[in-house]
Image (cartoon, rainbow, N blue to C red):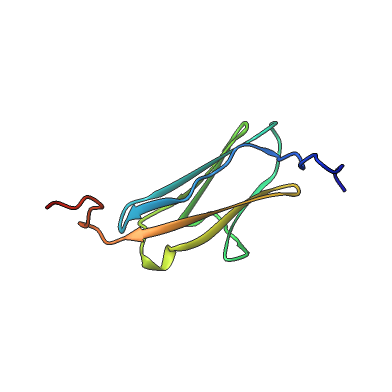
Length: 105
């Protein structure tokens, strides 16, 4: 148990942020750990993500990257990155290709 008033130390020095991506584009999430050699797991809906045609996973030193390729509506949802006892949640929101967030009068 951490001491009262002290928050637990995170294993991450940089945490991924939620993003909004157009369908068909890639979504890239980056996390950085405090030190090298830390095993990082990426999850979607509570299930571990493995490298595949859909998901790219890279680790270089303290930088860890998850790439979701060719994003579609089924990729939208909550994701997480885990290192040791630290877990960071973030969201991927998919917007239709061709739609913009800017509105004109």
